[in-house]
Length: 306
Ligand code: NDP
Image 1 (cartoon, rainbow, N blue to C red):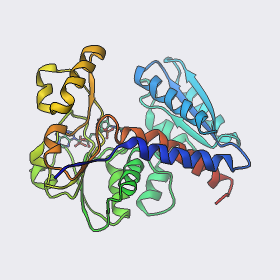
Image 2 (image 1 turned 30 degrees about the vertical axis):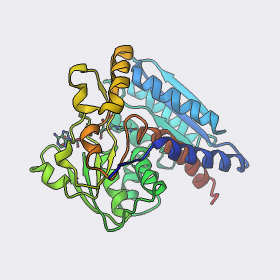
Image 3 (image 1 turned 180 degrees about the vertical axis):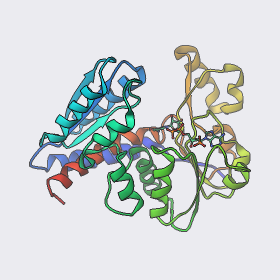
Image 4 (image 1 turned 60 degrees about the vertical axis):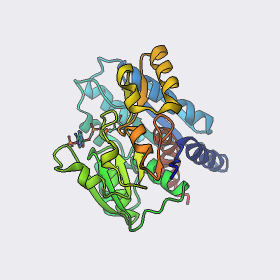
């Protein structure tokens, strides 16, 4: 059986197109305020990407970059100002924050109606109780991938490896809402392979390169790889990549010092899966698209537009 590759780009493009079209038809332009504190290199790339995509889709974006010495009080003052301003529809505070700032306090200070990352306890509670909520972008993107490729969720056994607030837990809630039978695994789970190999839909959100091996996967399963890890070990690259990929991957390591891999060993997965999201090119591409959708939804909801 040949595995179906569930590419994220066409799903993300379809969502972005829809958002851009809706934005064009609105009597106002939704505004996303993105806040970055300090000089974390990855955060700079992520926020830059979010701001650029907002502008491409016709949203207004504000970029607030604060110094690494910013105090919690100063950041909270900015969040308060953005909460108050009626023309701001979505607020995004990029994590991680410098160590003098308590992330939990800052995330809880964001008005839940503008919480486009979906991390505020009010949105977490709304999601858990099946109410209309702003939902974290990455797990929401996974649902969009499954829908786009017509992979049924209802009645399936979905196993998620990872229980973070950002990915694992909201992923479980969304799959449950879509009528899957859901199992959540984590670092204390015993006999992991025994459980994951029963999954019709297996979601890996662990943060360990290639952790999910062939033995973890049921023949014909749909495997969603949320992980994004840097991989630089040329010597073990042949354990990860098959003949069709290995040369390109080695070239990338040579050129950039690393290549991106997920939490699933792609070479072993491809021998068993029915469908599989690649890394790069899979779930990661959905996160920004879902942020745009959340900003549009937040704007419509606040302004009582259906
Ligand atoms: P966290 O580190 O917050 O959570 C990792 C989870 O994996 C924890 O629940 C942990 O269990 C579990 N885990 C760790 N080791 C094992 C193990 N040996 N066996 C079983 N479970 C284990 O990570 P995130 O949820 O934030 O991210 C997960 C991955 O997804 C990362 O690679 C990250 O880069 C990627 N990611 C990708 C995004 C995208 O846009 N595509 C967005 C966000 C994340 P425990 O709770 O017991 O410690």
